[in-house]
Length: 300
Length: 263
Image 1 (cartoon, one colour):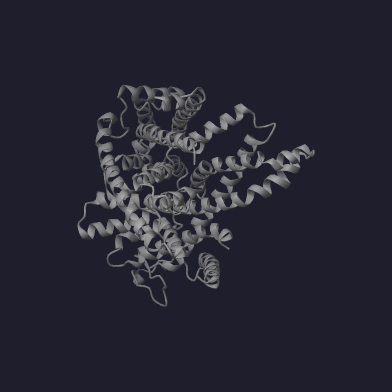
Image 2 (cartoon, one colour; image 1 turned 90 degrees about the horizontal axis):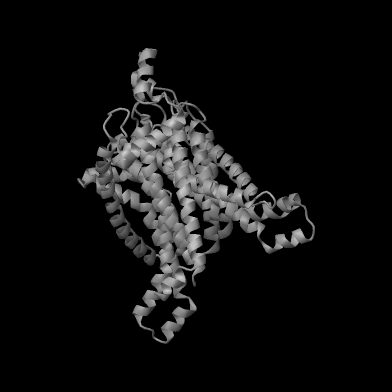
């Protein structure tokens, strides 16, 4: 309890609330920016009506899709429809709330598989780094070459390999998503481990034969900042990577749905996806900043 | 490892960058010339990277694509750098950077980072589809999002350094401090970051090509890679040639950021 009391001092409360407010504001501004971007897109009524449609048909479509209303009214109309579960796609006219769980389920499975792949690949990279521990030049060369392979190149190669070997596409997709974050994480852990081994307290502990468990606990605490790296790379890979990988591997998930909606100018889906993804990224960034502040203010 | 091997390696990287630039600027053949009779030719002395399904020379097309991608990413990185530096300077410059203005820039920066980057980038690319500047605007949105926090942190660090306080106490003007103290202090780091940003933008520009948001008929690396995937089993050069060129270019650009420190 004392530790909790110490943590929640008046000052601590203020900076946590400050950061929270900042990210709530950022989320709200972000949704406005997304809406502002989506209304800048070419008029979907023209696209949906087709090249030979008359002006009356286009106007009727605009009225049907509420595109004739002023932008501010449309923005609040979107929020209203979103919160009441009545938001519908411009094309299929089905309520998005009915489609969303299926899409999120596919992306959720991919995300779970990605976390598994991340753990396996990080372990594998750590073994490789240990193998080349005496030749940092070779190790760095390996890291820089692997890190330079863009996601879509590795995804296409993995799609080819998984198709040839008859492996489920979700595994290939997960491996391609986890490749870069695992390299980043393992390189960071390896570097920290090398530094920790030479720290005075490690040398003293070795000298006085401190129990291995206590030493491990101490070192694990110092590894935690590595996790903050994951927040950044995950924020990027979850939002950008999932869309690309789902699209390339033909997985009908949330990312692919969003990307296809942008390409066919389906504004309600873009708005819904934007709100969900912005909320997810804001939460990740909030957690990252919180962890960053905690570790930078705490003892080294 | 012997020092001379490392030096050879570093010089090799610079040489490789030069070779890639010559490759991108020098067209041995017309990249748009269609020759159906020469379709799907494997790599040979006549066509170094082979030919595609329309008999177009893949070597010239990859070079042209690299040039297009690099020019788009370069322009976007430059614009992003200048805007981020200007905004960051306004937010930290004494007398201008008030508390509320700083808070506003802070929230704006967090908002930009909170939006999943592919949403605005793809929306801009769709908005300006089939224009030459469409990809540049999309890439600029990405560049500004990530550059702004870095520039702010660097400038804030420089402005709060003890030697700046000393210079102010000696009566230096804000212009003198900016030109003679701040810029020389922050520029090496910011240039290194800009190079990283540029490499990331090259990768993202290729990604826009993968999803079809490029400026046809001009080729770009992403669309060449994406088109080549269909022939990966029997004509792998169509996928491998542009992919390898892109990976080598990215690797060399990223490694240049570490060049000064390593040597």
